[in-house]
Amino acid sequence: MRRENTLKSGTMYRYETSKLNAHECDDMACDAFYLNNHEKHRDLYLEHLRKYRALKRKVLSKILSKVKR
View 1 (tube, rainbow, N blue to C red):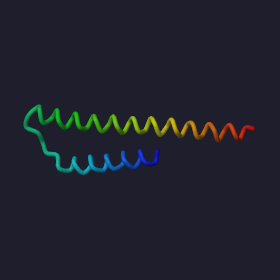
View 2 (tube, rainbow, N blue to C red; view 1 turned 45 degrees about the vertical axis):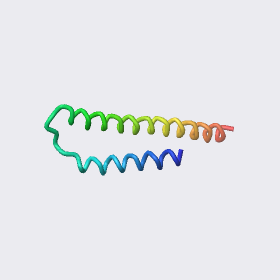
View 3 (cartoon, helix red, strand yellow; view 1 turned 180 degrees about the horizontal axis):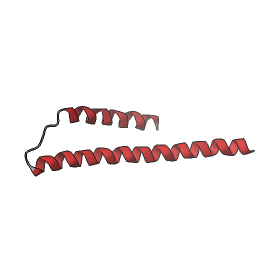
């Protein structure tokens, strides 16, 4: 999970940097490109959050099960 977190963070930082170079589009194809790119990165981020929360839930439940004994 640490490695995946590092890789996703790098991807998001690169995406953030690329957004600085974005310009206003004159046509729908350009708008569609930026929209699709944004949606792709948003989906990657949300999937990473789902995996993190699942791992966190698993770890916390194991901790709680040890405490209850």
